[in-house]
Amino acid sequence: MAIANISLRFKFPPLQSSCSSTFNNTLISLRKTSSIACSKPSSAGDEGSSGANDSGVSAAKPRKLSEQSSWEVKDSEGKDYLYRLGAESDNVNIAVGARAGMIDDVFIGDFLGKDSDIVFDYRQKATRSFEHLQGDYYIAPTFLDKVAVHIVKNYLASSLNIKIPLILGIWGGKGQGKTFQTELIFKTMGVEPVIMSAGELESDRAGEPGKLIRDRYRTASQVIQNQGKMSVLMINDIDAGLGRFGETQMTVNNQIVVGTLMNLADNPTRVSVGQDWREADVVNRVPLIVTGNDFSRLYAPLIREGRMEKFYWQPTREDIVNIVSRMYEKDGISRKEVASIVDKFPNQALDFYGALRSRTYDKSILKWVEDAGGIETLGKTLLRRKKTEKVPQFIPPEQTVEALLESGYSLIKEQKLIMETKLSKEYMKNSDG
Image 1 (tube, one colour):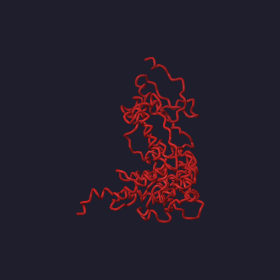
Image 2 (image 1 turned 45 degrees about the horizontal axis):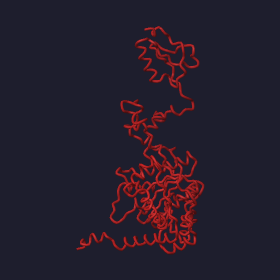
Image 3 (image 1 turned 90 degrees about the vertical axis):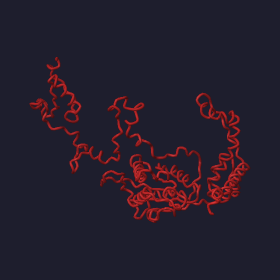
């Protein structure tokens, strides 16, 4: 072959190591047919010599990437940096990755594939930014002071010579706006929190919820470290996931979650998610806020002083009037009228007054359905018509005090029916013998 008599007179740009394995394999296969030898790039002092031995392989020492590079540094066990990264990774699922005939096929799957993207889950945004909270809302001063002080104290923990609880437990009656008020405070302070719910505190896999809490805690820490924003880990309705009600059974996951939260409160800067423990693995302290209705259902050592600071939220009449006034402000309802509505329905939670406004829309929606063609054509009206023509415009009803009071009496009637009828007793009336 003609190629056998051609010597390599040009130089490849210096390789980062000697010859890459792929480059070596290619030239070795060529050598069998054309007797071309692979010459490794020589060092600066040996530029004139080939530096190859009798077998055609260079005897020069492999060049380091850089004198300052940590990628080739060995630890006390002789393992390099990449080996340690792989050993400490919590992703042990080696079945994923680009496979299906050993890659190609347009990188596997439907347009860049599913299996090929092993970091897809890790790129999902886990934090909240509350762009949906548009408008002017009222934040109760007492609530604001408690949450803001808790966050600030935890961020100043290293400079304050006091014991600071990591967890703030906000508890109180149902529908009193605990979560919503907290989210308004986050938006006001520029906090980008990681939010969990009670439904994530149980799993069919033992240990998964505890690991999830630690992982979310570290995610919030990374927001602080990488984005320069304040962050908080928040768990809503924690008593629904961890509380003991009647004869409910304590599961392994309940115990692990309680233990995880206690460990976070005791060691807020050392959080492991399964990797080998490293002395240098110190995370930022992240304030933790939990909400619930009855903390007496929780494991007592978790809510003790020093770990959790408790805040009972029961809005006063003034708080309710101010919050509802902001809610009805765009409807033209004055503060005096709002106060009269609140006095008509005392001892109701904040969500009751939001339900009043929602209930006033019912008649207008029924009229819109009739104007749009009736119930039989709703599928076409709401879904298919969007692709070809506009959905008929819905005109919100004009809010009046009379309409709101009418909705309120209707809601009160339903509440009383539930409490007085108790159909479960009617169904089981023969069970007592």
